[in-house]
Length: 333
Image (cartoon, rainbow, N blue to C red; front, side):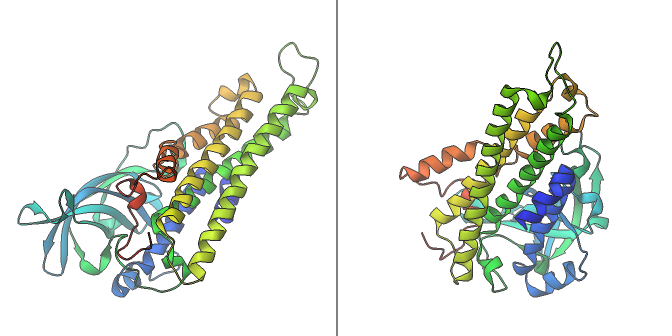
């Protein structure tokens, strides 16, 4: 899947992003109760989109919940048949608490026809993902169309032993890998003919360009190789029949961040080397930079994750961070 997303994003960053998001959400079929999985994923071409943050409220009623809320970043929502949103569960007007300071959170899946899409996606990059706000008001969602990542998977197999959120990060990183591939290809196309102002040499002939492209290639491919290695190791653990330890989950978050940031650096180098024409909005190299910059802002690939990885490596607890979102009871330490 990581390789497929990289290939798609090398043609268009937004196409890669939409395939990444809805492709990763297909794993929810193994986390939902069987009735929910069969209802949502009843057709091979089913597309599920939405946001995981608990911006909504779910009032518990007989058989399920009455859900209301509004969520940003609804990537791929125009192509979707179903939308998902994070909700806090309420009873008698109060949030249900699972322990001190922590309410009960669920993901609720509802039909797009029951929701409103708000035209809000005015952004630097990833513009074609259609990541608009969306919302619903007092929609009934049956219990079998809800779950949370701490629930035990309903299906067996390696895919469902992986930490769902952490594995999602690897797919996000693959988008920027493809965007960097695209940018480097574009530079190779223009280099034989483009001459910087007052230069007798083309980009293809300039030693300083050779040096910067070499560094960009090494940075980009090092990040990509690191990602492939960690994903392969995580898959081998899951195939062996166990869940990754917390330290092994940390590696997935760290590699997603690093691969995405390395690819962003390569794309930024291409933008700089390509010269002043790069600044125009209709220049595809400009779009590559905007797409890469926007993708790298995702919580799973932000540079803040380096700090969390460093804390964990130096012996400090990070179980109260976002990295514990997909922890399940009984997971190995």
